[in-house]
Length: 420
Ligand SMILES: Cc1ncc(COP(=O)(O)O)c(C=O)c1O
Image 1 (cartoon, rainbow, N blue to C red):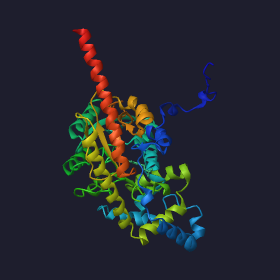
Image 2: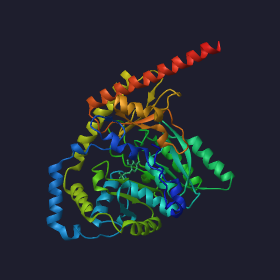
Image 3: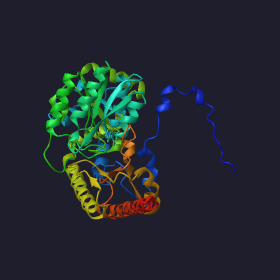
Image 4: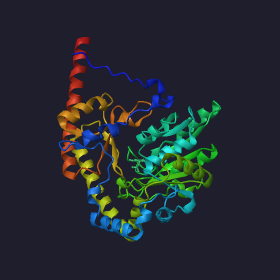
């Protein structure tokens, strides 16, 4: 039977910007990766199974009994005042001294990214991102038709010389980037952290080039090794700072925030009104209650301890089962590490076999580059699978990679023989 061809009869109606919209590789894999027979390193999920459910139930009950009518009502667009006060306290731990009026609550970090794109990007504007970069940010900025300029990372985070070269090249062409977007601590997907020297250098360069910086810091509180580093926002109050409760508490609450200079917050507030009026009055109050009246640090420490054990299990398994020639980052916090395989391995092509045969899911490196590089790389999540699953999954993945190498060697040696 001939395959069914589905024509989209609404094709002429779509806005031009939808032409650049595409699905995220991470979202595409979500259902497959959730299958019980699959060991998944593909997600970006905090381990919500280890959260104190009784405590959260109690906090929810308290909110409903104490202020049920308001909790079940619309709220202000900038966000519930009590939660913004709580965010101010949270950021003060990172030496960020913000005013409640300089904060807007969003539906998670993802909505923050969308709003930043909405208020700053015109079609064809340049945005500088890291290579690799958080795929959701690239997706959000692309939906406003930004052109992405990629500056590479290494183990110390964003590389400074290529950043300068990118800015100089724009300047020569009498062009400018709208902003630089970066995840300085426990990067998604690379797992690396921007060194102090480079933090200072990025800010110096930004000042020199009058470049707006967006610091995305969802993982900063998830350090399990090494020394704390200052946030960029604590070093310079002209930058846009954003974070989320998703990784330090629960992504199900769908709450994040932006802290920015007042005029920018005002524009972001208009974006919020147009998008969804306000974030959930209910979950904002539950989060406020949990962070104000319960020992959330204790629960977070328990979680990060778990992540450290799992990271250690992953590092040990990689050492044991991955082939020579493969390298990987060694994160001091967060949820991910980044593995680089021999050049000739294409992790996107290998993924189907990995899922169907090895029953292991990961995200191919290509998904995190706006320019199509990263084909021989993969992002591996260690926060969700257990240490046993990690050992078994990396063992199976290592076996698959070794078989790919063997295939390549057999093929190339045959080619040599034929050429001799
Ligand atoms: C760097 C980064 N920014 C933003 C987000 C989105 O966070 P949220 O789940 O709060 O929308 C994520 C989620 O993984 C992320 O890794």
